Length: 157
Image 1 (cartoon, rainbow, N blue to C red):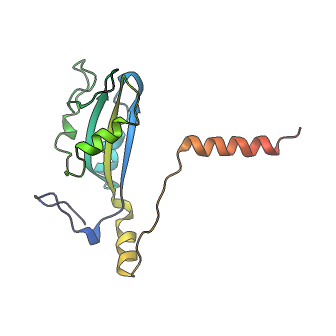
Image 2: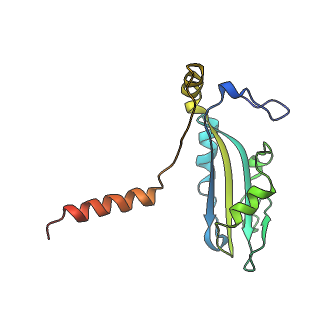
Image 3: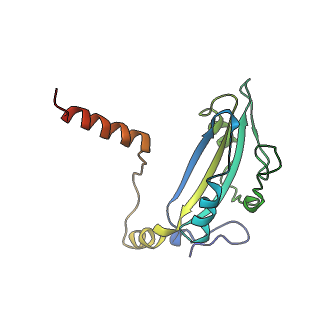
């Protein structure tokens, strides 16, 4: 279902929505705690990792790629399983743009993934003549702030 072929292309009609996230690690402190969960999502066919790139931003603002096998340089974090997660969707301009949203002295992971769980619905909607005209995501922090504001408004004065 929508698998990438050897050339990195896919049957677009069968694909699920594709999302990207940029996750900043302030001070370049990465523990790798989320990687087993990411692998589990891929192994269970919930998502397919299309691209995974790591970047650092130096204190002078220069942005550069980071080797994907050992992000913290201590020899303990082995991410070789992610090597080759590159569909070619991310280019140098995307990496530079990600660099604009992270703080100097920090690192970030840029992940592009297909939502395999949504592929059958997306495909059926396209066959039915539908097309996606808007999409969005509400950050958890925004949800929490909204709930707190609503609770404060309902609190007796």
